[in-house]
Structures are given as structure tokens and as C-alpha cells.
Length: 307
Image: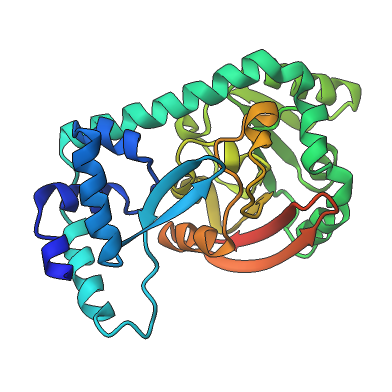
């Protein structure tokens, strides 16, 4: 069944597209210019062979590579097949299609922030208020023993409640956001709290280039807004010093689909093992972590990853 599943060129393309990303049926149809009935047929074959699994995001279904259990008798053979397959780069057409889908996701998020920025903080607090995990964040940062002169960067800063915490511990903070209206809220916090060591920068994290690598990168409740979460880890690794830290705060997987409408979430949280896989592939090692359950049914994960 494995050989049959991977014998078809289109199914090989699908497996390469899903190396680290998750895509829905329609997205895969767009990328590969394949009609939906044909794509659904190929996905069924790959799923039946144990190569793919589905992940429900509210009312949407996404496909991703399956985790191969250690007691699977053909696991070594399957891994060898996939390793060889992954050495073949995507064609220019497939990569262009992939990028178009990711751009569409990003546009969806940008339109939401442009439309709903005034209510965003209030809406997000319906999910998880910073005060619920502030103490845990402070403890995690303090436990890392950063040297004097250390610098930090916060991605998607917006109305960040973390800026004052970071400004008190680090010599310099770079607050980055790709939405002007959200960055204006960051600037307002900086001015009101007189945070003289904070610099605000309007840019997408994927386009960010630093003259000097930073010691700590903070991603607080932002990953579930990003079009390609796995790519974020790859970019983060290029921005950090050797023995740097990535502090990632986000929701564990959930099925409360209303967060899409009022908070603009692209993803309904993440499985911890999923974050571990993406981090490991980008060259990170798992560090300290904490998990906090909230009364409204959400669970927050606070993760440190080391370069």
C-alpha cells in the first residue's frame, strides 16, 4: 500500500507540500490545479496508507503528514521514502501556488486587523486575559538568566502587555508589527509608560533583517494568526544569537470556532507535539514550559525553545 500510495506523481507533490504545512482540500486543488474530486481521491489513498491525517479547525478540515508510530513495522521504510522525496524541491509552479495560498491567508488576517483593531483587545480577553498568565511569563523569563546588554524582540506587539516586563529586564526591545494601526497602539503604550528602550518597527516578521541577533524573541498569542506557523520557527532561528531563546505563548488545540470571527484566528490553537516538531526542524531544542487551564475551557501553553 505504501508503494502504491507514493507511486503517483501528484501524490508525491502533495506529500512534499505537506512536509511542514497543513492545507485544506480546496487549497491543495488551487496549488496543484487539480479538480476537487480527483484531489479528494488522492487524499483518501494517502490517508488510508497512514501517510496523512486530518486536523479539524472548527468547521474546516486540514490535511497534514501523519505521525508514524514507533511500533509501525514499516516505519523505517516509510521514513526513508519520505526523506528521499523531500530532497526533491517543489517546482516553480507548485511553490508559486503555495505562496499564493499563504498570501491569501495573510490578507485575510490583515483585513480582520484593519477592520476590528478597536475591539480586538476586549475580544481577546474573552479567550485569555494576560493577567491569567502574567506571573508564569515573568517566572519563565527570569529563569533564563540573561546577561546584561541582552536584547529582546516581540513579534506582533500591538497592545502588548509584555512590553513593560521586557523593558525592565532588557537593554533594548524591538517591537514589530505588520499593521500600522496595531503598531500605533504599541507606540501609544511606549509613550504612556515612557519606555525609552523600546523601538517600534513596521514590518512583517518574515521580512525582518537585524544587524545584531537578539537574545530573546517573544511571540505572545500571535502564532495562531500566521499563515504558515512552521515557517515562523525557521525565521525565528535566524534572528537569535547562539544560545538564544524563543518564548512562545499560545493556545492548545481547541474547537471554539467563534474565535475566528471575533479574534481573527486562522488556527484554533496547536498541539504541543506539533510545535515541538516545527521547532526541532528549525534547529531549536525544547526548554522549560508550562500549561495553564482556564475556566472558559481554553488551555494556554507557554514554551521556551533554545537555539
